[in-house]
Image (cartoon, rainbow, N blue to C red; front, side, top):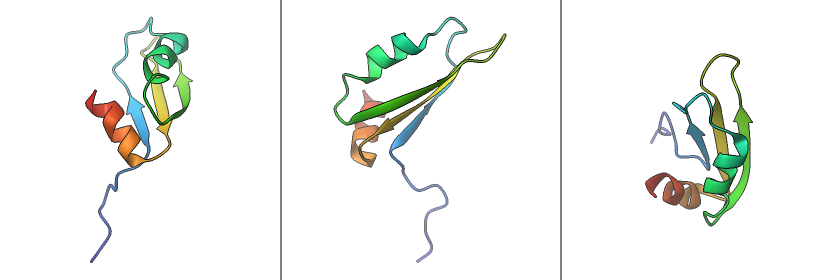
Length: 67
């Protein structure tokens, strides 16, 4: 059986953020979710920032995405 084209992973991509979103604001949101490991915030000059949030495992990332 072939592997799924996009298998689940433990990292969430967070996009479509308002231009004034901050790393501290996102960290405060995600750090309270069980399994949170780290956050990588990528500001964009003149655009909307994006963020990658890593969790211990796929179930923790799934829980974060659903809440």
